Amino acid sequence: MDAVDGEVTVEAERAAAGAQAEPLAEAGPQAEAQLRKVARVILLDPDDRVLLMHGYEPGDPANTWWFTPGGGLEGDETRAEAALRELAEETGITEVELGPVIWQRHCSFRFDGRRWDQDEWFYLARTAQTETALDGLTVLERRSVAGLRWWTSAELSATRETVYPIKLAGLLRTLLDEGPPGTPMVLAPEVA
Image (cartoon, rainbow, N blue to C red; front, side, top):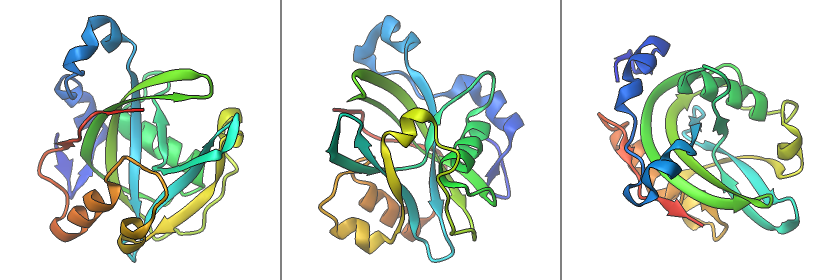
């Protein structure tokens, strides 16, 4: 995917539409058609802290986890456009330098009484805006998001709480130490 000064252009993303990650081999053609296209954001502040959302199962608020901002594409928007829209809606942060896609993964999980099968692209982004707001959450998100938190790499490494994607602490440490990969790293599929 082409980038200008480390930023992915919308035109480059549209041109790369054919270069998307391959679907899970065991999923088959029927499952491939039902994959939800998702854009997620690894948002770093000037201190290299990452912003995560604190989620929970609507029917079981004791079942909690932390996850990256992001969500499904709407209409004909690109993943980059979806990443910026979702970030604004879920966090209130609009002053963002969106960088390249750094990771891709397929995941499948049960949430709110149904199974979600997703093809996720993770964008690296930076911001100096650290104040957050949950004003733009959807109805489902208002029923399942407890808040937001900026995490250091050390805090992620030490936590015993569930964090998605799994191994985020190590992935973040590598990202901070080595910089973004030249091409997106394909993460192991996650099925829960």
